[in-house]
Image 1 (spheres, rainbow, N blue to C red):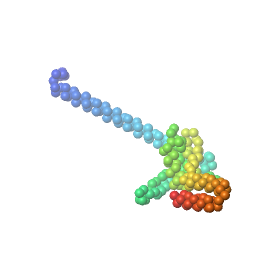
Image 2 (spheres, rainbow, N blue to C red; image 1 turned 30 degrees about the vertical axis):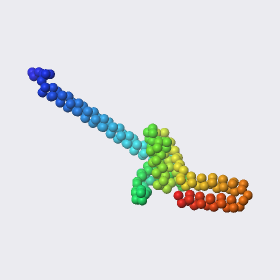
Image 3 (tube, rainbow, N blue to C red; image 1 turned 45 degrees about the vertical axis):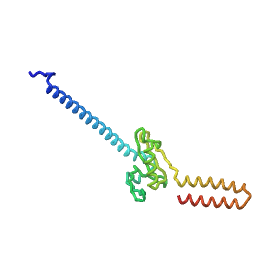
Image 4 (cartoon, rainbow, N blue to C red; image 1 turned 90 degrees about the vertical axis):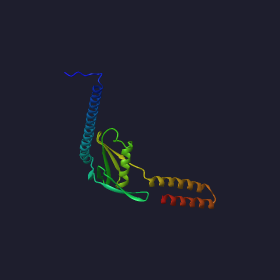
Length: 199
């Protein structure tokens, strides 16, 4: 039997190489197992998501909604530095009820089921902007809850600010007895309204 000689330099080099090879094999196997488990987890989550999306169809029908579209792709156009760009979105469902059209996004899990989640909110906001609708629903399939999410448009905010300005100007106009001042206030409002409409 061949004995290992710790004083022999060649023997120490072979031992070191052997240990390095064993360590590398260990780390490769560990990485592969970790990647496999992660992929399996994602696959299970994806399969569960698909299953819940299909269950959502029955749920929506039970609530009186007619499904008119399922996962169709909508394209929208935007500008970036003057260049026309295109993006695609894919809402889960487009439904109708009482003559109104709604977008329904199906979510599961603990985070994405709320519009407080910024990624979910951004997704719903983009759907609301691109697809003509009367409302956007977030369907929490964990709790079987349909939540209506409404976004205030820029136009609504602008018209709200303008309405406040008109009310303040009207009160000021009634309080001020001089016609030239009233006319000046009116002209300022016309300029503000034209500026708001332009932007």
